[in-house]
Length: 455
Image (tube, rainbow, N blue to C red; front, side, top):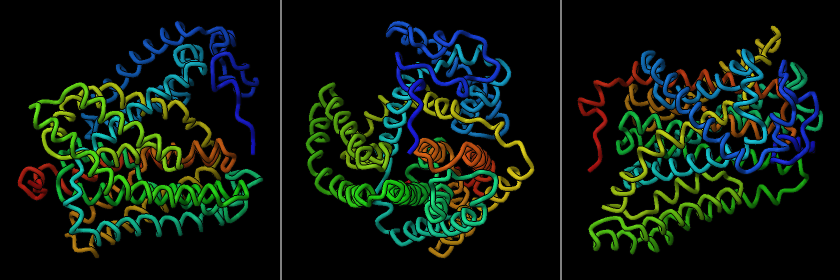
């Protein structure tokens, strides 16, 4: 397994090799990679980075709103524009100064806090009662969203195994095909959740079905990734821990965990408000839940989501949403999307062969995910409009795709070429989501009661 580049991890680490230096950058290496950066320097840099991120996301969001895109999609695009794909290409010196490698761990940690808080909010709004009578539909959509793209992705992995330098030499044919299938089958769960939130569908039948299918879909995709990484390590222990541990923790949170948290709801009802002590207790549960799923290997967002679901409904949930909503959605989440975009290099797609592979994988991804989930939802009894809407939402990959791609790149599964191809696929499928949603389902349907909120 290839070693990690030490220069991009922590302040004080040796600067990376010249090959990793931004093209055309003439700034001194020490000032960019931060071997001399103190904690004060890092904090000062973070404040300026946050100002740039918030301004860029707001400006791109204004353009995106004019084009019919949601704010979340605009933030993803803003992240790519702030990275080497545009900002780093036009002004490499300035981009390297604004986002030095030594500051990335701090930005990463802040981004993860925002993502975990947001997924906790999604869990707070998730009405599990709606899905209990629709288990068949959720499972059918979820399994279709995994099986079909997994199969098509695995076939594409076999076909393109020795073309366009997609996989590293240490990866076997089976591992490469399984990894590509897992990457093709993933859904942008945080992004899907935010689109549903922005469209005010979080408590609707359709929104709940999409969230449930997306959550189980991504959980299965992470289990597949664990199998690939375990195979590379020559041990099945990691994969077993991920699958068994994830299922066990989910069952615990939805049964014992919910019962243990009932007194929190009673305290809020008794006091008539959300006290600091109760808020801290709820956040403690959130952080421990996120840590547990991350340690298991399923990623922290699922632990945050489960913690939100486990919270007792009523005044506790209402007041926590009121306290968290505005700060998380306008401050923390843009940091997460921009951080992920900073690692994207669109310019690596440069040859006709690579473009051919990219177009084939894009078509395969749309057919395997969007079409399969649409057919599954229709089979489960949804009308065609609702079924296509679910297919559109499930087809968006977003930055969950970037997460799984970064893991594959770091662990030596895929090359930078395949990484870039899959990033393009993620951006395109996510950009498609909002316009197609409006075209198929539309605002009029929401206002007229086609998506009736559960009481």
